[in-house]
Length: 134
Ligand SMILES: [Zn+2]
Ligand SMILES: [Zn+2]
Image (cartoon, rainbow, N blue to C red; front, side):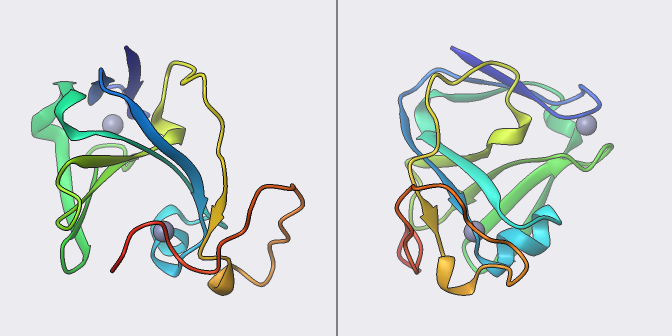
């Protein structure tokens, strides 16, 4: 089991399922939403993902049709994303983890539209587009 929480501590979650993917996403949505060069996204099975505290604090934002991003309404911490075309998965913002997932990011996605001011200096595979179909 892997735990995570928002910055103010109101919202807490647990991951009981398998970790399916861990990657950096450089898409413009993730850049705007995170306020940074990229987001660190950990995908897990929706069945094993549980909000265990502060569900009423969670605020939902539809960033594009079928993509719903969830954040803490008090502290603004970005926590996870649900995609209508992948109802079996939850995409967690890894910055909200409290425990070590025992896995590290495997790739960069959407590098064709990454921030021009950010240079990728590691040797992970770089994909010009995303890991899920639009
Ligand atoms: Zn919070
Ligand atoms: Zn993205």
